[in-house]
Amino acid sequence: MKTDSNKPIEVTVIVPCLNEENTIRLLLNAINRQTYPREKMEVVICDAFSTDRTREKVRQFAEDHPELAIRILDNERRTIPAAINTAAEAARGEYLVRMDAHSIPNEKYIEVSLEILKSGIAENVGGIWEIHPGSDTCISRSIAKTVSHPLGAGDAKYRISLKSEYADTVPFGAFRKDQFLSLGGFDESLRANEDYEFNTRLRKSGGRIWLDTRIRSVYYARQNIKELACQYWRYGFWKFKMLCRHPSSLQFRQALPPIFLSMILLLAVLSFFVPFARIILGAGLSFYLLILISASLAEVVKKRDICLMNMTIAFMVVHFSWGGGFLFSLFRSLFINNY
Image 1 (cartoon, helix red, strand yellow):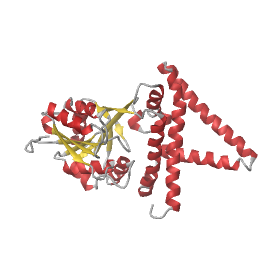
Image 2 (cartoon, rainbow, N blue to C red; image 1 turned 60 degrees about the vertical axis):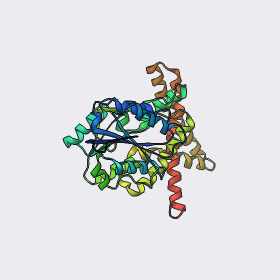
Image 3 (cartoon, rainbow, N blue to C red; image 1 turned 90 degrees about the vertical axis):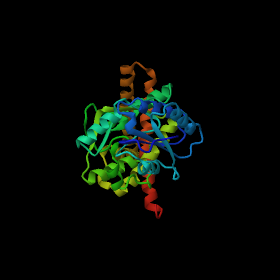
Image 4 (cartoon, rainbow, N blue to C red; image 1 turned 135 degrees about the vertical axis):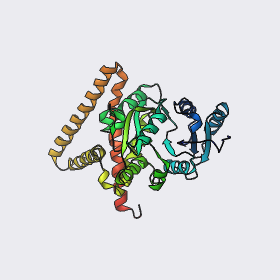
């Protein structure tokens, strides 16, 4: 793909990518529809050697839309943090806007992001995730609703907030390239939570993070229970490793799943020896299920979609997978050297 190295590039959109043939063109179309001048921006896709038609679709899009500068780089280390760091180092723009290969930003995404950065309101800017089902099935619709519900998302502002405000983190993010590199970029030893870890370092250095409701992107949730369980196990597993670096960054929403799961496991073991533990375990699980069923039923009535009763299952998968991944990571750190 040809690019004019003399173009006055102001912003580089960086996209980590692996086997995204089904969504990559949707993202590129959304970038091409931005209100921000296309002649001032470029797209750098850092691909971890996709084995599907992702690269072919990117090249075809670049040929069809020569007005938008697009480059593909190889992600030799094949992780998301490495992809972002590689793309950031190669970026020609003064500003970086990170996007995801299976998300669709709204038309003012880049324009508003840069407006806020230039105003000095914050050093990292992001927006709201509008979470959509990964497919048109009952379980997919339930998963999408679950991960954007307070019982599934906790107090993560970028999933539930209705107002623009300062936050502890934002999805993806937009920042000055020089500041991103001066902070060391993303921690490549983390396979998840790399953005939260970077934002923790940013805040410790005096930086501010702004969540703006004018900045929005559609994000496609996992399609089935297996994918959801793997995703949240991974989140919990790597959250513990991130907390080893920044223990003071722990939020209540992050501590609750492993604490709850630990209590359940402890009571389950005690119930073999202490009859009263069985009563507490049964009462606790019953109350927990009642909360989940009530929340699911409320969404069924609100959306008039009986499929959303599956949210009860999805809530449990999110909570127990996240908590299980966290505890597994904790125990590995205690019993395996050099972990």
